[in-house]
Image 1 (cartoon, rainbow, N blue to C red):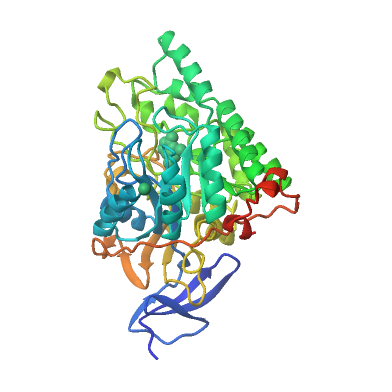
Image 2 (cartoon, rainbow, N blue to C red):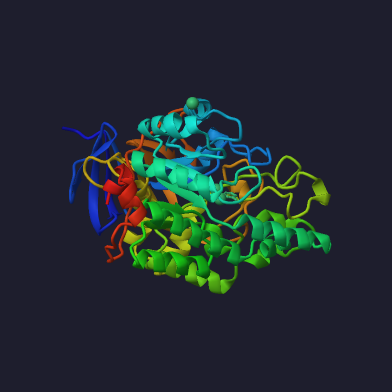
Length: 491
Ligand code: DUC
Ligand code: ZN
Ligand code: ZN
Ligand code: ZN
């Protein structure tokens, strides 16, 4: 049999090993991994290249309106093209329910947008901003059965905030039906109170966003979310963790056996609060929630990645232009409270970690693979086909050139944002060829993918990674209420 595609003479890294090997690919799957394979119909010479699984980005906002109605600058085409150039071959963005919207309709709309435009494969997490009995009893079980096996809730933002009672309602359904609950954990009232006082003193500049979103808000809400999840004995994933206090709360909960998982993002490794402190409104380009902290916090985020407390590294790509359609709705008069929140990162997520994590020796190649692909697949129900290099898996593979050095400039990127917070950084190691389901979609700086070629991925019940040794008794409440559903059974 002649393979459709071979990748030969490369240095292959999987989630567990690194070795010299050739890959044989047919019908979009990896069908052979061996020392010396004959050339396929298409043959790629990977001499000097590192061959790794395509990245999975499990946190990206694409063609989504923010809670205040500001539209993302990227649609499913520009976002997925940008992802592909950065070595990401699967993305899990959000289908976002705003208040008053019917969940099945929301899913339908996002599915249509993505099907027409995406160039890489995708799933959806469902953002919930309002809880109704119909949603709990019908819409969520149906969405989960359709393969949307993760739900995201916000503990802050006026238009999105879910209170603790309704968080418990959502956790109950997720636990029973087999879905992961992703949580944006920041204490709404702490932020509201601080912001009001700062604005009253005339402190409106972007850097005061960092003051209003004090780490205490993140720490308190993280601890509360963990407590609620423990009450029901359901797994949760805390998104975009920014610093040491929240990491410590998560680490200790995991040690005590809580099914809590956590994510961090490039902004918490590569930006600091000082980036927000610039002339005029320039600092708004670096504002996200939670905000980047200081150098000492960055070191603790690295540590959290290394010891498994932070299991996934995602972009939280939140693409807003630096003008009145995006970041600055009131132009020069925009206060920190009115800015659109978030930074772009889909394309640079992997090159940043490759250069500063892998090539510096902070991370092993296998850790890099797990943090950027395998753990996402496992935690979000895709491990049957994505996230690793193994026989039978989708042939989503990236050839990295570890020698290539480039200075980041937005002009070379493929998103629609108009700036990057990482402008001017020197990065070493870039994707040279990107393959999705056996098809070369990016090669030597050229896109070869057709619009709409990406497919929807129905996801299975998440099988969360949990490395802690403790096996605590389930909580009394979950015992008495008989809450051991499908998500619980995954452990
Ligand atoms: N939360 C996100 O998850 N993304 C962007 C902004 C935010 O607050
Ligand atoms: Zn309904
Ligand atoms: Zn968030
Ligand atoms: Zn986000």
